[in-house]
Length: 109
Length: 109
Length: 109
Ligand code: NI
Ligand code: NI
Ligand code: NI
Image (cartoon, rainbow over all chains, first blue to last red; front, side, top):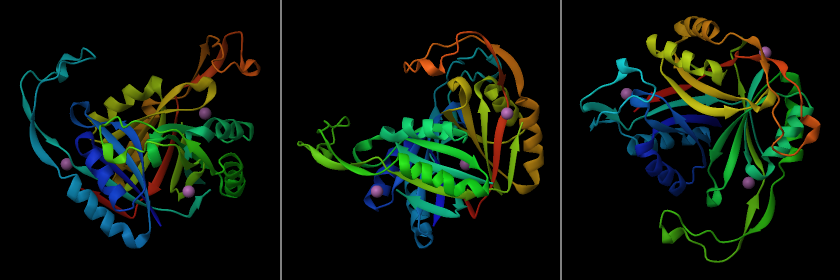
């Protein structure tokens, strides 16, 4: 058994969530932030049998493809004018960062 | 030392939290979601010495027992009528899913 | 590659976040709670190459130093009068608890 930690952009998070349910993977979701323009993302925790890791990776890849998108400027909340970008920019949206962790014990009560 | 990741239903989360404090375990808690009817849960991160893992598992088992309970219907927020269940159903509440992870380094500043 | 899980008090979280960005570390942040007086904290998930672990530890140590501070009494929300402290107390603020986890696979889509 492995613990898969997958950080997924909010744009893809619902689609992945549905795909996981349909394929009998059980995921715990945590709201998270980070990355360019502070866009929101979701951290999935998924316990998975070793033999199903490749299938899970395929599901994530299919539902969280990284792609380019124009993003309107966001005025800086914290007043940090240095980080203000006054014109639309092309950013990478979607995508997922995935860590597959070994586990020593798994319990379910 | 191990890192214990325990996903606990909200119904049991306060009780577990108190039990951990009383027994000198220090836990970090993260709000999480997932599972049937999208009920909320809490993800506990607990750093624990190897020798105390069994005691911690006992504490979680005692405070997070899974049991059946009738749940009133919830109208679907997202408008997904397929998933709407118009009558009370018996669901499993409580319970915990626990991963014990090996760690390579532990630091406290 | 390692997955670093760092629990950081809210007082130090922005400073650490900026330091990580400046040094090209990419972090995912999760809001978390726990510890004395229920003060908020942030859990950072940071994927890092093995050779950069010491540099990352230095950054966290420099930005999250634990120190003493007087804290005004907080009236108990849950009505638990036992835990109410009616005078200012000196508490440890700042600080970080860090777990360095081995990973079996890393993917980025
Ligand atoms: Ni990328
Ligand atoms: Ni169950
Ligand atoms: Ni301390």
